[in-house]
Image (spheres, rainbow, N blue to C red):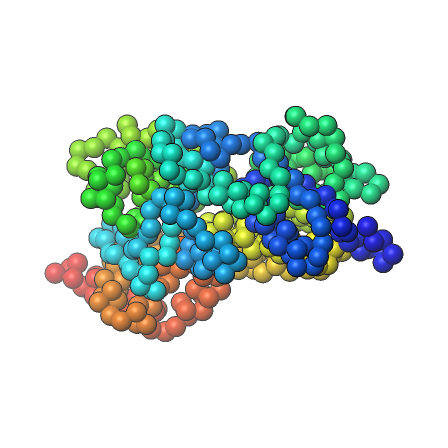
Length: 448
């Protein structure tokens, strides 16, 4: 290690890197670190530690995610040589169906292409079968192995700082010294606690509870009632900012995003007419749920997510508010890998080269909070929702470049664009005047 320059710690040939967490963040970091190191002619060794087996169905292989890969992320991954194979994609999403109390509207992709993919982070829900399918997380791990990384299905029990490295110990392996440790551990408080000694200034992200569950249906039923469309709900229900039903071959995944969602809030959503109308008539949808969970999501970024030889990435650091967590994992992981290989692994290095990337995500999330605040106003107003519905229906008859509100909704639902871009497009007078005018028309029609 080069310590001739104070504050700089560089990786040398034979450096060992320990990555705690084999989800997208850990895999993306490992993939890019190996790639960058090869370009630099640097020989490194990477061990990825993951306690779960992503080849298992149900909770033991689940990573608590809605499982939507946005069109923008698919393009970025393709440019990096990561092309999702057919057996990873559970269903291609061609349209969004917007559900409001005032009616429904189908929103086509602005690019006129089937670019959004629904996937499972693990093998699938409890009881899932299908040997031809591969989980998204396992596919990424396999790519890392092909590039030379080692995957160890082991739980890390301790990490301690040594004079010239970090000591890591697992339930199965003896203590080993690493030149760098990467935390890709999500939001589990017990796992984040491992970093107290090696990253003392770290403050974990603020979180809130969400809800995810699966409905088992025959594939032909899903094709009949859901098609290749993701069904999005903007209903006036407490605590819910966004609800979606995502078809995935033999299952439909429900994702509810908002604040402190509990069983009562979930039941109010499932009992709503708009949701029940999506399923076969008379079906008791609550009897078709093989598994469910109330995972936490990152709603405010961590602080000081790095120290000498240590960096935290993905949900453990900075994510994207309510949307595209896999995309945020890609962004932060690549930035951390680039910093480690090209700049160094000291706290100073991460502050200079990694933190600005997180800051950009955090600033964008602040704008996103404003967008969702406006969305909440619309959700609570029957007049504005009627106007939104009329506007979207009209726009779908227009050319793509005139579907301004539809494009805003599409990117808000998918996370395909930064919130700042969505906000700028929302400032177009034609968007606001169109919503007001259609709301007035809807109000007038309602009085006839």
